[in-house]
Image (tube, rainbow, N blue to C red; front, side):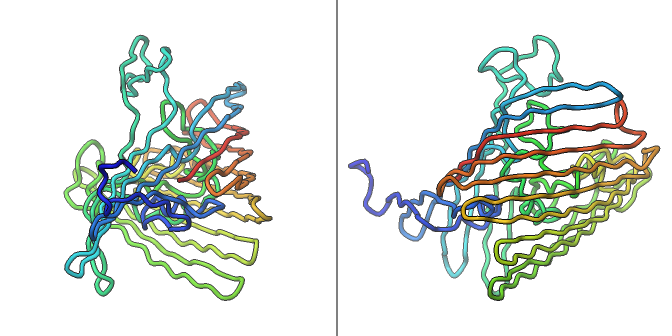
Length: 383
């Protein structure tokens, strides 16, 4: 500690303190070991610092319209890097929290080493500008009491689709990467192959763009969750909904519903999930409100089983999404399966190996049906 540091402002290594209730908590809770953080306290206020760093070698083959290509890369997994600063205090009976989180990545498309390109260039020759790839995912404050709940203002993870991505074992790995070409900071895991991506959104939820115009009304999301534990068995049931009214010509209601369950029996854990959406965008791409120019209907399901032996978790999952209607001329289907091994090297590092296979079918797919196979090896560190 620096001699000038006040005695009441002291760093504390927290051996087993769980991270704050945020997206970071959900991500870190999936690690094989408890998450760790550094904490500074002064008076009635505490500042926690936590984060994660990962890197993977990916070997990928793609077959499309009879043409096979192969590539490899050093890349982030489904998670980017993450650094979180979380302020908490209690004043006048109110629990108060503020969270600032930055998510950098290791990928870029620049031809010049050390100089990332501007993604807005679209790959244009000579378009190498010093573009910093840092995604501000968490930026909010909240206040409340246990008796009546919490009010949150700012940007944080959405509710619809939140629980399933936090249950996806490929969150700690790479999964599939059909759409995650550089300079994206992450791959897609099983997004678009069993569920849609929840996204990080302003809270409460602001209007989303449809056909280039802002909607007039705010969107709404809701989630109900029930957890239980009895001896060696524990589980969670949840249901979610999302609604957005569009405006302008051809306006419509965009809605989505989801239902999921996670059950643990000793060393086994099982996940089952399904969703049904209308007007939310292309679920096979996985992003809410992407390509929303017409009312596309989507649905999907996701299944996963894992078994833990000592410090090693073995897992298998499968998911499928289907889209039809709107501007689509066909029912387009994307399905994916992943086999993964996740080994806790120590309380900070998890080593990961995965094999993923994806398949896309439908008349609207660019250049025809798609098959990809990805082998990835790497690791992730939580602190």
